[in-house]
Amino acid sequence: MEYYVKSVVPIIKMNYDNFTAVEKSIADFFIQNQEKVELSSKAMADRLFVSEASLSRFAQKCGYRGYREFVYQYETTFVEKNETMTGNTRMVLNAYQELLNKSYSMVDEEQIGRIAQYLSGAKRVIVCGRGSSGHAAAEMEMRFMRIGVNIDSLQDSDLIRMHAIFQDKESLVFGITISGDTKDVLFMLRESRKRGAKTVLITAKNADRFYEYCSEVVLMPSLRHLNQGNVISPQFPILLMLDILYSCYAGQDKMKKEHFHGNTLRALEGKR
Image (cartoon, rainbow, N blue to C red; front, side, top):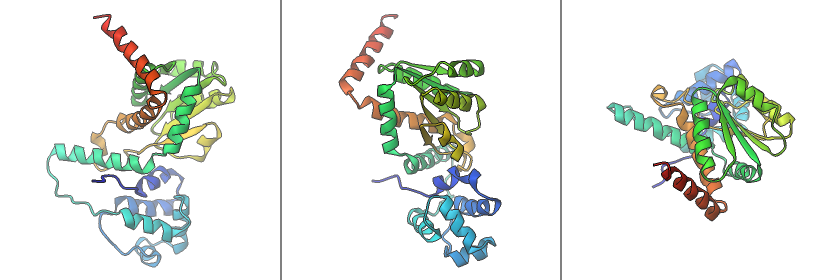
């Protein structure tokens, strides 16, 4: 059974901060809507008290040629939500399933392949983040180190900024910030890029300015508009993207990486 469907809703959410006030009112409807309604441009313009031109501009900001193409994709994947679920367990599991569906809609496998190639070519890798993103950075260090990557994670503000000046064209720098606003992480990416490093930003926010100093911007689902999003760890969507990257990278020269992994296991067993 196929559980995952491509949806326009994650695309709306990642572009949300780029919308005008009118476009945000349109976005809010499509994010929150749970029932089948008439979605023609005239009907929606009347429902939302906006012009049909505003609907068209909104669709174009989401990456579609026009409103007709946008609404076709929306109707194709729209599922009316059943709110009869009971119990905390079912609530949490449904929230995770919603996140998995959104991740499926957003993941760019070609991009993941490019980043795996960057990992293969880098002499050293730095991954940085603050708070929950910092915990995810530490997890990335542990996992990728065990398959032969020369990687360090940074969570301290001063260390992040100081390490930025030591990066060069042999470096690959990952910055993790869910909000896209963590100043230390963005500083690290900007300064590293100036010095010739490849830079990868992992974020739930899409902004044109990121592409000025990031080789790749990996977009992940935001918890902000998620039903019951407050019960989900903010690390989950980050770790999900890192798992996808790990799987892709580990699959390249698999025997060599399995050898590294086996050696780290033996090293750990030696301390027992």
